[in-house]
Each structure stands twice: as C-alpha cells, then as structure tokens.
Image (cartoon, rainbow, N blue to C red; front, side):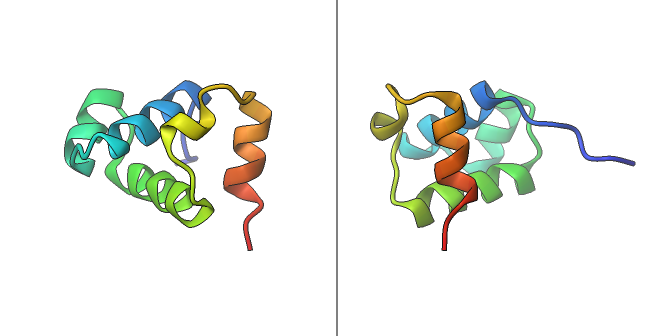
Length: 71
C-alpha cells in the first residue's frame, strides 16, 4: 500500500502542537496523521532547530526545503 501524502498544513500543525507540548498520540489524533509520521516531522523540525514561530511567515516550499535538506 503506498504512503498517503501529507499536506503542508498538517506539517505546520504538527510543529505547532509539538511546540505546545502535545503528545505524539494527541497530535496524531488531532491531525489524522500517523504517529510515526508525526514523530518524523517533529524530529526533522528539532534537528533543523525550528519552532512554529520560525515558520509562520515562510512559504510552504521554503519550509519543505528546510525540513528535507538537512545535513
């Protein structure tokens, strides 16, 4: 079964809720995104050193660039 594509709005919400100290289980329930996917995007945001306040004013493409092109 192919993976379901995640919407950028969900990624932004995951980062916001993660910053509000919501559990991964609760974030998954609120967004409808699998817990493993929630964990993945929270880890990407953490390793990039970004918080929700950092991404409020950037474009979707810039956010994806930050999250997917890390060393």
